[in-house]
Image 1 (tube, helix red, strand yellow):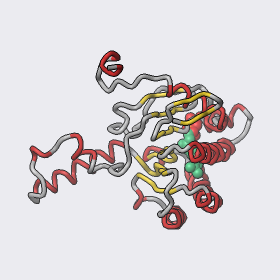
Image 2 (cartoon, rainbow, N blue to C red):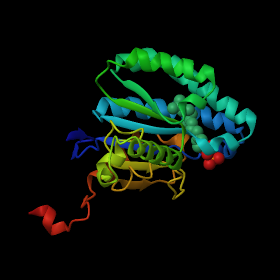
Image 3 (cartoon, rainbow, N blue to C red):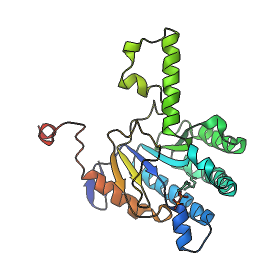
Image 4 (cartoon, rainbow, N blue to C red):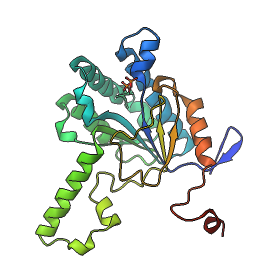
Length: 246
Ligand code: FPP
């Protein structure tokens, strides 16, 4: 529980965000798409800082999907540089706020300069005990699940596990998120109602929050609105409302 804007709310333990609408926001200002990504990076910084100050334990930001490689080369290059700049420029603040930075995704296939910058931040923040900031980088949920299936099959073949052992918990342990609780709240900005290959397994029981606000304009006030909305939801996990009240 935390007090936000004088209202007591249930804070989600884990918030996941699909940061969408940078390009459309830039177009509205008659600017290049990169201008939108720059402002989007600032929103990512603000939301991370706010989450940390509120005491949220996990924040996962979908920064670059496996499908994003299909964008024009210069946009991909701009996004990679923004990421490098984002982690480098904010490293001191991240440490001051006691934030621990990690990533999920196909890390090996990221450019070396991105891995170098991220490695440095991950190493430098590994003992921090505040917000776990997880950047989904070169991430795709189907790719993640297929890898899990391959590794399960190998472990069955090598007699490490039996077919009968395969159930929810075991499967979840083969995912990149094995040490992370499932998101309580998923936020998607920009008025799109899609999951876009993000955490498909992990979002099974998450509350979904969609807003028309473009990501570069999603700042503290909009985040609070999402958290307040979440705090009024009843999470039933398949049970009835009555069962929960008893
Ligand atoms: C979606 O907007 C945004 C992205 C694909 C990239 C998100 C990246 C950032 C906000 C910058 C870097 C982040 C960090 C964590 C430092 P879009 O381009 O799909 O917008 P559109 O749908 O309006 O075209």
